[in-house]
Image (cartoon, rainbow, N blue to C red):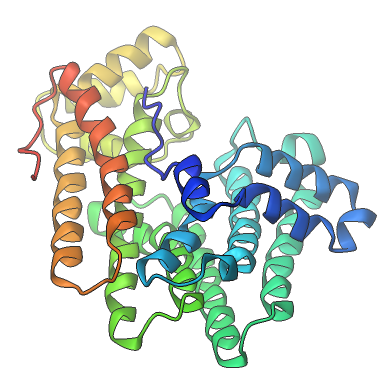
Length: 333
């Protein structure tokens, strides 16, 4: 249902920076010899570049925040691209996603390609022409991110059954990626130490917003997202399954009938009726407000990109669910 993924517009950044970030990323990575000797690896890269993921832009935004030279961020863009590909390859296996590359290449080769992409991402930074202390800080950030995301993927397959466990999962699996993608751009842009904690805090809030956004999207998608059939608990389904509301038992029974399209529609209507969607939007807007206040009180030299990130997550969700008649908390100005 949600057509806007809540990310930044690549065209707007390319206009401002004068570079096609995707062409440059592909050219940087494709010249690494391993892609010539591993055709399937190159095919994954080509597919990923063709999708023009908005998240690859985050290092550029992090650099723009401190008015750094965005030409210096291409190594971080390439590295974050490799890290994201690595995460998605494994995540699709764990989620049994019908779109996952493992269906084409098999689980063993897909797992090996995931490891290879992670290693390539670090290698790009190792070979980048940046000063040693910055290089070390960027590598350290990526290593910590992947350590935390691996824990998050472990927690995810445990299928957290309550809200505290859900937020722990979000803060280990989702937020670290977005926080790190912004922060390494900040580092390469020469960001000062006094702004390091605020940019990381902003990235964590943004990552939580993206997770809530994606959970709403997955829960309301048609045909049914794999979460429904696998018994997974994204935030709206977790709310409807565990909170004591009048439709709870009916919802739990109806969920067993999915992927029947009629049952799916009825279960999704219950997500709206029981307040699960409103609850998610409440959490989304609370983080939106916290992130806005963080921007306003912090002396970032250029705040435009950060505001744009927030607005692109919130506005489509509010507009669409308002049109469905879902009670929406007051939209912060």
